[in-house]
Structures are given as structure tokens and as C-alpha cells.
Length: 406
Image (cartoon, rainbow, N blue to C red):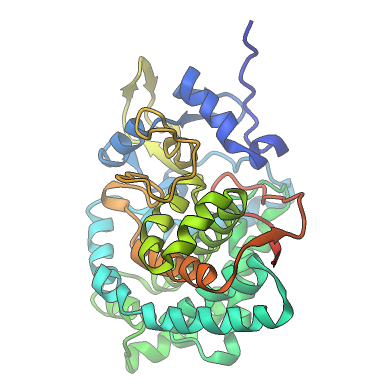
């Protein structure tokens, strides 16, 4: 007799291996009511794509439209901090529905076109070289600390127009903002510290860009304020969004991808045969095989029927990218890491009107890192066989990835 599916998605085994847990849900109950956290868990690829393309049925205004308490539970003394988080997050443009979302996205869209982001490739190449030069001198590195974290911070700080001396501080703020999807009961303290720190830091930069705009991202948001699309608070929190979204997703792509190559030496050998030629498809497979983002939440805007279940208006709905990208109905041999996989219709960046604006930049960074690693190093060994992941329902994040090379 099959055992019942337990509903705690933050247990160490589920955090360490989401593929077994959500794969079982995908097979046995693809639209699953999670009693513990009172939300629907959606795990199949076609269902995820359908959800994203019916944005009128599923609201992105999760923090604004969901009065229920945080999950997992937080300390009662931190309830006031959670209200601050709800107000902060609720002003990000990705937390809005149409028509407001469309108007907000129009302001920033030009900055994030594939052509515009492709122009950052030389900057990324230079940054990757400098980081790997420093690592190579030491003979080992923690991919998380020495490469995956500093690279996107360098890029984002440049996009924001942050002066060089301040970039370490921006990195510290980013690490606190990452608590948004975590499970620790006391997570609100560090999260709100990061949010308040961003507001304090960015405010004078916005004041300056309103008067003297440049070609950086803060100037783009400031132009939205002058046009009446953004409020000042929305300018501030959307700057924070750039830091978080561009930081965490790329970190995870680089760490998870490097680990996938370590665990699959045959695929590493393929990449080494033609690093420049293979890097593009290899990056797509890294995005699919161990996706940087595990899940995204919405709120049902009305009653919706899916696979014989009725999702009631205002129910929480959470779709799992990790599971969708291993769905055998979409991918042949889905648990196999294959850098020649084509086509590769993964949903690592979501789908529909909320498709990730920074997808091209993450791809550029992934391609340049994996290409450079293959060109420089014969192979890698783990310095620590017991790897740990952050207890996050949102992100697939290693705590560290210490390696050496032969």
C-alpha cells in the first residue's frame, strides 16, 4: 500500500532532493492540496504553462491580495515586520496585474531587451576572467563565494550605477534579501534589514537621477516616476527587485550547473571539446536540469477547475518549475543531464506575460562562465561531499560549493 504524501515542503529531504518529492506529486496528484500550508501545488509542465498564460485567472498580487499569515510560521513578535515585507513586496511591478503591470513593465522593457542585454557580454567576460584569475592562483575555490556570487553583483552594481566602494555593501544587502523564500522562523529580521537598507541606500541615488538621469537602471525607474507610472516607493523597491532577481537566479545557475558537470563527467568532456560552441545549449540544460528558481506563487482570481479539482477564489496556488522541467510528458529521459538536448522547452524563466525580463542576461553569464571553466580547467573535484541547500521553497540554492581541480 502506497504511503500518504506528507505536506511539509521544508523538511531536509525535500530541500535536498525536490525532484523525488515533487516528481511523486506530479505522478500521483499533479494538482495537490497541501493541507499544511493551505495552498495548491501544481507540478506538471503543461499545467504550469497553462497557468502562466491565463494571468487573468491567477493574480500576481500575492502580498497585496493575501491577508493570510506567512508560511512557514514566523515568530509572533515579528508580525509587524511581516506587514512591512508585504507592503514592500507589494509595490514591486511583478506583484501587479494588468493593466498596471503592463504600464510598469513598459517603463523598464527597453532596458531589458535581448539586444540591450547582449551588449553586457564583454563586461561579463572581463569580470569572469578576473574572478577566475584570482581563483586559479589559490588552486581551489568555493564556486559560490569566489565566482557565482561576485559576478552578478558586479554586473548589477554596474547596471545600477553603484560606485565601486559600495559594491561590497550591496552584496551584503542582497544576501539579506534572499530570506524572502526561506523557512526559518526568525527570517523576517534579516529580510527587513535588507529591505530597509536598500531604501536608505538607493534613496539619494534616485534623488540624483531625477535631476541628472544617466543610462543606468535607477535612471530608467526614475523616468517612470516622472511619467507618473511609479511612485517613489515603487522606484526604490523595484531597484531592490533587480538586485534580488538578477543576483540569486544567476548564483544558482552557476553553482547548480557546475555541480551538474562535476556529477556528469561525460557531459563535461563534451563541453571541453568545444566550449564556445557548446556553451549555449549547455546553459539551457543547466537551467532545465537543476533550475535556479523552484517555485512561484499566485492567488486564484476566481474559481478555476483543474484536473477535476476546484481551485477556489483567493486560494494560494504554487507551481513548481523543478518538477515541470523534469516532466516526462515534455522531456525524453528527463532525469538525464544532456547538454545536447534540443529542443529544450524548459520553464526556468517562467512563461507568459511575467516571463523573466533578465533571462538573456542570466544566459549570457551562464554561457561565459561555463565556457571559461571548460577552457581553463581539466576537471573538478568536490572538497566537501556533503553539500547543503538553503531551506527555501522559492530558490534552489547551495550554501557553498568548494572545489579543486586536477
